[in-house]
Length: 198
Image (cartoon, rainbow, N blue to C red):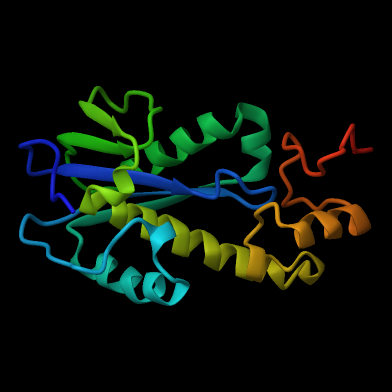
């Protein structure tokens, strides 16, 4: 894992979680790590077990120089589309960093300029750079916690297990119970979906 992409000391890594979900927010995080930060376990959140992610979350929060997390909810996702919502989430997470960011590294290949700060998109950045990996862990753990909370309201969709992703079980529940205020109406919620009576 590389510590930084640029020579700037205040380089922020940013990533999102939940882009492919049918329900719940897309959640983004941004992290600036101190130059002496070391952690051999941190990796792309998708490569880690839920237990490891939950153990790493407080370590990242405690040891990061700065971090921010932002949810963009389904109503806004439906209005501006998932790509724009993901980028907006990253901008909102970056805004929470209480410092003058000098450089931004972004997981993936799409971003929009943030405050004229130089940036670089890095495909699979969450498995290459520590700050992006740390951001991916925060985005995933915060989003999962939110999905577990709204699961209590609508247990029939089993969001505490599928986290809103398009599993067979989740789609079956949509077929049987319809949709909730937490579903993304602009998404293809059922494979054979023509339209919902909204």
